[in-house]
Amino acid sequence: MSDHAHPAPPSEALSFDFVPRRAAGLARLADFVPRAGKAYAFERNYDWGPDKRQNISGLSPYIRHRLITEAEVCRAVLDQHLESEARAFLHEVAWRTYWKGWLEQRPQVWRDYRLAVTRRVRAMEKSPSLLAAFDEAVDGQTGIDCFDAWTHELRQTGYLHNHARMWFASIWIFSLRLPWELGADFFLRHLVDGDAASNTLSWRWVAGLHTQGKHYLATVENITAFTSGRFNPRRKFIDDNARPLNWDDVGEIEPLAAPPAYDPGLRTGVLLTDEDLNPESWAWRPGEVAAVAGLASVDLRSPIDAGELARRFSHAALSDGLSRASALFGQPTQRLDDSDWVSSLQAWAKDNGLEQIVTAHAPQGPVAERLAATRRKLEPLGIQIAELTRAWDTTAWPHATKGFFQFREVIPALVKLP
Ligand SMILES: Cc1cc2nc3c(=O)[nH]c(=O)nc-3n(C[C@H](O)[C@H](O)[C@H](O)COP(=O)(O)OP(=O)(O)OC[C@H]3O[C@@H](n4cnc5c(N)ncnc54)[C@H](O)[C@@H]3O)c2cc1C
Image (cartoon, rainbow, N blue to C red; front, side, top):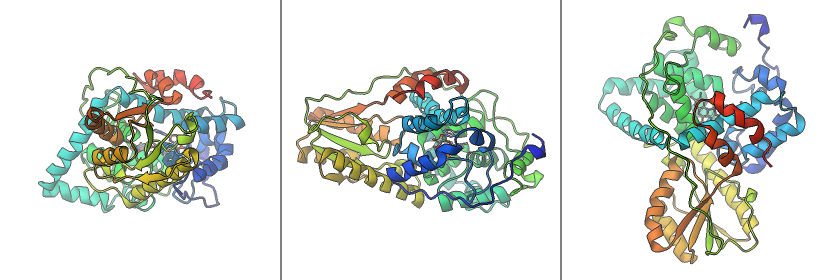
């Protein structure tokens, strides 16, 4: 792209203020929708800095926690734009769904990542040189001005522009030569939209582990052009010639299995988690729910403590979900102790005489891990754990078997789901 084709950054300021409530997500959506068409397609790749966010939506923390759903985001966009004009935006929303469906069919990739993070953290504790290099990176002290600025921005705001995430991951892996899993873990701990699938698989994509032989290399020219000259890193710091990491074969696809179904005949409690905070979009009958409780999973993202902004967002988003659920079901709600899901859920079920706990289907990630472990303990005690699925996921995920190129075929039908 020649210089004159680059749009000028806007003169007015617009920063993201991530208020962890559904109402704030809907307000952000309404504000952004007029810009979701051609303007988004042309300008979305520019990172004009944290005070100039007009060109992107800032919806990721809301979509990540399903304070708002992908379906309602796409409906709102298609109410104001032709599909052909909003295609770039609709495709970005679909990337999240693609990553979710891809990981759902390769649970081993998530399990391997979890083990690798633990192994890498232990290895680092025994290697002073690795620890020093890691500390420099996560403290923003590498001397690479753009990288250090993004580190501070991530810690101070809980957010980075998509292009900055790509450059950051590329410099982490190929210039600083740090283990990719530790970088992914750093992101997952601090991002207010930190998500098992989008984060892990994007890091793997940058590293060259998603598509054999294809990796993403940050270059000085690209960073300078797409930050509109805010950064111009010294060439010697950026390795734009590195080879992809060694390809690891992820093995066979595991077919998608229907999660345990909800039985309306059993005395039921609803469990909300920070995976899906949208109870109003399920079809409930009056009086169907005897109790409502909430559990947060943000502290399960990593063996290292989660960042304060990410923790605050997830906990407050859960509170918002619970207060909406309380109005919806006409029941008081309870925040359970997050440190021991089995004991918390067992005690809650006993206190309320529950035969069944129903929750939104949790895709691969910390909530799914905890639910699987809890199910093994509670089912022998006569307490079922059922999971509700969404048409968005069940329609899309079976198509996430190969690359995004093939997955795109389902998008026109997906975005028109009621
Ligand atoms: C290394 C790396 C790590 C990432 N980690 C996460 C993560 O933990 N959680 C997360 O939600 N996204 C992650 N992303 C994807 C993307 O960077 C963010 O979703 C996006 O920057 C959020 O800003 P936005 O809401 O303004 O996006 P917009 O450009 O306005 O896009 C609208 C929505 O589409 C989805 N989306 C957009 N781009 C992508 C993408 N490349 N992959 C998946 N979904 C996308 C998001 O839900 C987003 O809110 C990561 C990308 C990279 C390169």
